[in-house]
Image 1 (cartoon, rainbow, N blue to C red):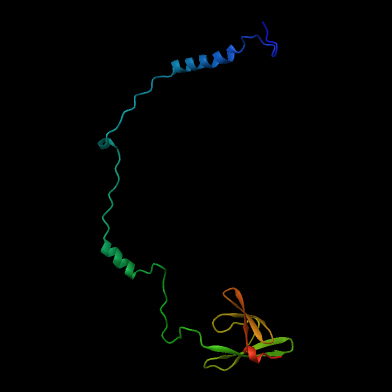
Image 2 (cartoon, rainbow, N blue to C red):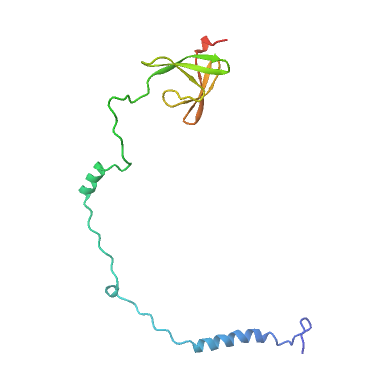
Length: 154
């Protein structure tokens, strides 16, 4: 008798069910028996961990006091000042298309600086205007007024 939908005999569904069961039964019977699991006692383990020596805390503490753990530190020279000299803006000068700023540095003659030069302390001059100077300090631009607000040049 044939099934009306697939054209196969009505008992054809038995074959896909019986074949895996038959293959599993054959595979089960052909495998050898596995050996039983044997539990090992702690003393029978074939390896051991090496014992570390006890740390000498006094020696480690003394080493930390004398070692330069952050790298070599250069000694400070006693004759060099630790801070930059005191300085201030005096004026802005224009010579043709070039602009200069005049600064007064402590215990030194007045200096003329132009765009791109460095001020005492490491700031770089970015732009010079009529009454202000734009400098770059630590990667940030700062606009400094040269004259007090009440003395602004017209």
